[in-house]
Length: 210
Image 1: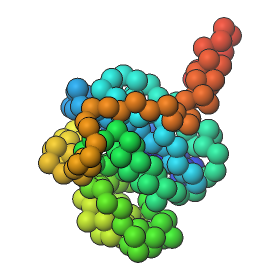
Image 2: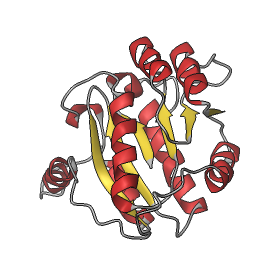
Image 3: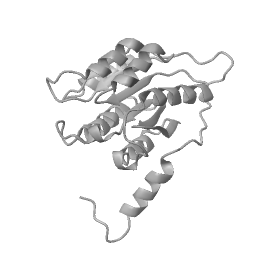
Image 4: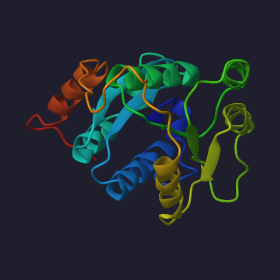
């Protein structure tokens, strides 16, 4: 499961074209490396929402991610804990093993404290979206330590996503023993309706996308 942060801080342009847009590019690169592997997508800011349950169709995940922005999120902020809980629920319902990638620029101190007090039972890794040579956010580092998570720094080449893909192949939470595998059927597309409406609006005749 990919947890993509979509707060207003991700609009910062210290990473070109913006932190959020670069994150989407990296997600696309990762999906290409993991062709055929099941991937789901959760968007979070001040709330967390399942955008796409587990699917092997990377084109759908890429298309849905492209429409995510702070403007469509109900609340601005940082609800990483709730996003991790939602990821765990997806794996439990699907009955499959898995791990989590968090793509974020920072983790708020309150979220880091909460994760330190009650870390999720999930293998987690972070892609830290920050400018070259800039220090990694201290809250993100604290959260990673609490969850024994690896942190990969953003790079200009594909070495970051290659490392993430290798880690995802070796670290995952086992499926519950009483659950079968390969049965991810989920109707919880909380943001799909909003994203679909946005897509319809932009496709209307006379609308211009810059």
